[in-house]
Amino acid sequence: MTAAEQPDVKEKIMEAAKKLFAELGYEGTSVRKICDQAGVSLPLVSYHFGGKENVYWAILEPLKSVPFQPTTDDPKEDLLHFVETMITFLQGEPEIAHILRQELSMNSPRSEALFPLVQNITDLLRSILERGQAQGVFRVHSVAHTMKLIIGSMTAFRNVRCFEALYGSDSDAPLQPKELFQFIYGGIGSS
Image (cartoon, rainbow, N blue to C red):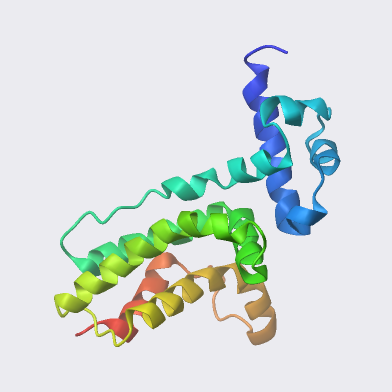
């Protein structure tokens, strides 16, 4: 195998694993299933990753670098950027969102190791809300409850098809991050 082929094989393994972990969970996914899905031979997982657990953590690596940092002194603007960045990430990586939801809700053996990955994101949101509260930009009675509601609103994007089947849709266009931001800000904004 040439050096040029290796990233392609690694990527195939990671994409197959991401899909399977999201569909079957960690316990339901085997190295053999990953290889079958990726169309690669079994030893390649060991060669590139050392085993299933390392593949699992490699596919969650993007959580460490969700590309958002507050960029202004305006908490409202930073909250908008946060919502846009998170929705873009969640829409671009639906399997990762599903894996996180599974692992954290089941309190799996891996959930404790996932907390630091998620903590970076929640710390950002907390700092934006606390700044906005201190500046009088947001009316927040409980930062913790507000964070749960915002994160819940963002993850509801994943269930759009289910909601549309149940409640119908008055639009052909999917909900946009700015619409969600307006909804959130309507609840916590001071003006």
